[in-house]
Length: 174
Image (tube, rainbow, N blue to C red; front, side):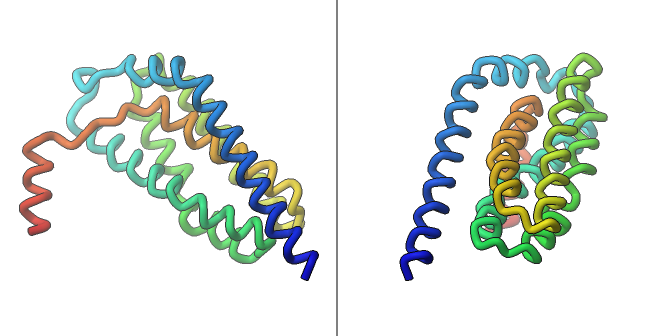
């Protein structure tokens, strides 16, 4: 019973420290990332590029929003579900990042490719650590993965849906 109790709190401590680390990195890099994300405007992109970037960004954001599930599997040392999650919800991450990188202006592609490579490297490291059943390594890489998602997405323009498109979506939903 005591072991279960201590495992529960060590898991919460890791999450708290990971969240605190992510928050501090985001805060420190916000200025640079915000400036990098603002270097491109919608005028720099064709309609098809905007659509492709918007779709890929939404897919990556959806995967990022589900990272809590992966964290739960890592905390539980559920090696099978860690692998399933990486090859399932995170399975198209490389393709979506490549779609974004291919549609960015040439001057912004280098940094975006670097961030995407780091992101995918962390996913691969978590996958390998889960196959080796290394709880320490999966936890360390998971904290870095959360930050890496933020770093990559900070470089991607966030094109809001056009007002006419948003109205059409609302009408379809009614």
